[in-house]
Image (cartoon, rainbow, N blue to C red; front, side, top):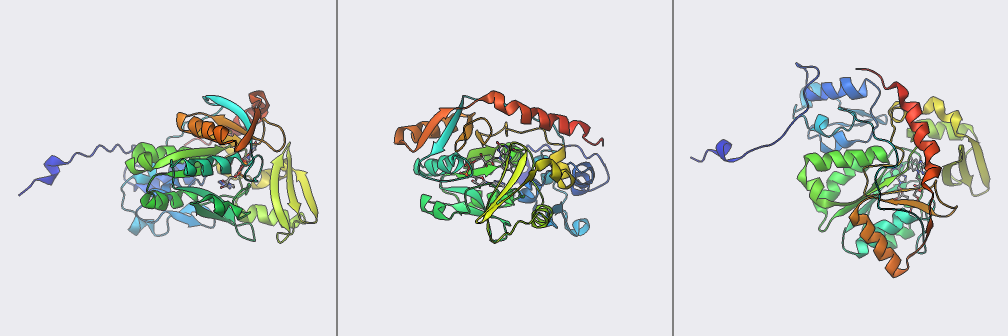
Length: 344
Ligand SMILES: Cc1cc2nc3c(=O)[nH]c(=O)nc-3n(C[C@H](O)[C@H](O)[C@H](O)COP(=O)(O)OP(=O)(O)OC[C@H]3O[C@@H](n4cnc5c(N)ncnc54)[C@H](O)[C@@H]3O)c2cc1C
């Protein structure tokens, strides 16, 4: 008889249980969810074999007492179980402004351009995009060819959480050459934890695009707020936060107010986040730092640098200068806001 146990070695390190006689999910719940530092990145839901999911837009695990397998995967990947806040500009190879000539987007559509160019180069065969329905509820799409970007809702910013990481699990299972993913800094950190812990993510996620982010919102909170302000969702074509103002652009006008007004619905997990630029991404893209109509592009890793070279060679985008100093205010604002991370 073959002794399998003697032949197979498992090198898995699971963080220590803070509550020794409790399940790993109960530890995650106590340290992250009940302490109000959960970012709702859903990295735990992407890996949980038992049933971590979203209930009322919050991370939850109904019936965990009977269904949790106590495998510890959730605490291995949660970026906030052992929370080491990131901040600043991070390291980069190039800091530039770009505007796609092929696509329209929130700013210079450089996120769309990077993803489609990576597909043309054969680096990835799909990119995960956050689209939206007519009520502005987010939906995650697998974009496999540039023609799909004629769907106008694929580009552009939705200021609501999206279930990108559970979809990433499906994407890595079905990809043939690699997956590209776009996300806010919390999603980016989640992908890095998945890559550290599970080889399939390390091998198959080939492009990680981070978005600059000051805050995001729960769907029910922001839609209620905007409706009270007079936003008609059937006419809404764009939402933007710029220079301290929230701007909802409709087909027949706009609603504009100070973003400070949204403090009351700021999710607690955003309140403790210090990472404005998604420092762990391959390339970060945002609005601030470059001229109107351009995206600021922070190229951090060689894979992203090669895609930028390809875009330049093909003449797919205009490039210009971006100014890192313009990011200081928002970087410092996030650090200052997160001063009071709740103690365990
Ligand atoms: C919640 C949020 C807050 C942001 N805050 C700031 C900010 O304070 N300052 C700043 O300079 N920039 C901010 N950005 C980034 C900015 O709004 C643009 O997304 C960025 O400049 C890229 O524009 P683009 O034209 O290159 O992208 P596009 O080519 O238009 O592509 C946009 C991409 O964003 C993805 N996306 C949209 N909504 C979400 C979402 N909710 N979750 C995950 N992915 C999403 C789409 O999948 C798409 O791939 C924020 C983005 C988000 C999602």
